[in-house]
Amino acid sequence: ATSLNKTVLVMMNNSSDDTDGGGGTDDFSVRDHLYQFLTFEGLWDNPTTKLRSIMQRPQLSSSSSAGIGYVSFWDIWKFFDTLFMRLNDATKYKPLWMKLTRNMIKELKDQGVQRAEVIMACRASSSFGDGGSGGDAVVALYDEYQQYSIDDKVALFQSLSTEVQQQSGGIFFGVGVVLATHKANTPQQVQQCVEQAWHLKQKFPDTMTGFDLFGQEDEQQSIGTFAEQLLWLRNTAHSGGVDMALLLHAGETFRWNSTTLIDAVALGASRLGHAFDIINHPALMQYIRTSGISLDLCPISNQVLFLEDNIANHIGRVLLRHNISFGISPDDPALWGIGYGSGDASAGVVFDWTVATVGWGLGLNCLKHIAAEGLKASIFPNATLKEQALEVFDNSWKLWVDEHAPPT
Image (cartoon, rainbow, N blue to C red; front, side):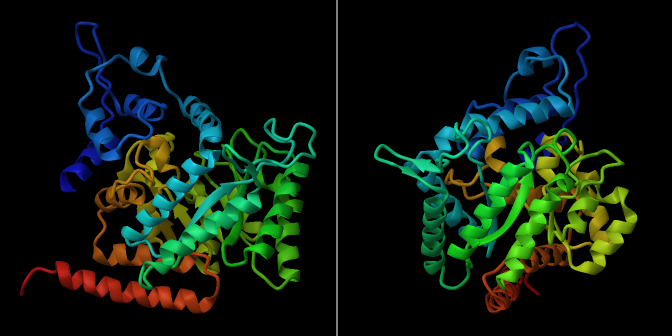
């Protein structure tokens, strides 16, 4: 495990692209690594093998390895977005989806994760070419025999989560679903999705935890464009006596004048995804610290998508010292070859915790603080279960420290 973690850190922080004196090949820089990492090649390979093998590849020029002379922030985002479309049909195939989902939940439990939420995409009936007429039902899953709706998919997800939870001996508290849709949609299409989210919340109250909007925020419509739809969801849920959390992607940008975070907070978001831009808004940072809003930080994702070249300079270090609540998330680990469902015990969030621990110089007190804050910010079916989870965490932490403490 130690050697693998060192390999990850070397890969993520090696940014040399000096050209040799003979005009031959460039050093295989981190951006070349990541661009090839973001291709379909070897997507389902064992992640440990993939990380090691990618370090042993021969030196290649930028043009021959990535197919272009320079990879910019915009280039990588455009390519990143296409991967979801390429994976769409494959991951809707029910037998494959069932296997990957069951393995993912089991691996989360085996890694000691007590509670998690995953995004499930909502496709409005006329968005992205689905549905044709705008009134046809969108297919969420399919197999050789039939097609399945989003209700069927959430029901299957709930059964898989319950299955693993019941086998955990009381240490795993299940996985919730966050329904989300793309900001490229129209307000009318987003309205379809918030209505779908409310329908699912009524039908699966313990599993459906919140709603999100995703998409590269510098090129897509702002969160404020959908204020009416998001407020409709919050107010409708409140009228029904339940909480429907807004867990919004916001601040995933390096633009100093972005207002996405301000919009998200004004609309009542209880968690903010990435929030990389937060340090450009000191007054908002103060408000977040005192209002109970938490952040989901994704250090490897931010480096893959060119928001930060060096993990050691990531905003997580600053936020920790300003006592801003945050947890650590792997974002889209399958797309950089370390996804859940592969059967690898070190997949997913382990890598983000590793680079954060070393890059930010975290000690045991900081590790416990971040883990506990992430658990506190998680959405549980009820307050009693959250209290139980926090008690389990505290006891598990004490046992782990006792087991690994040096002999006196």
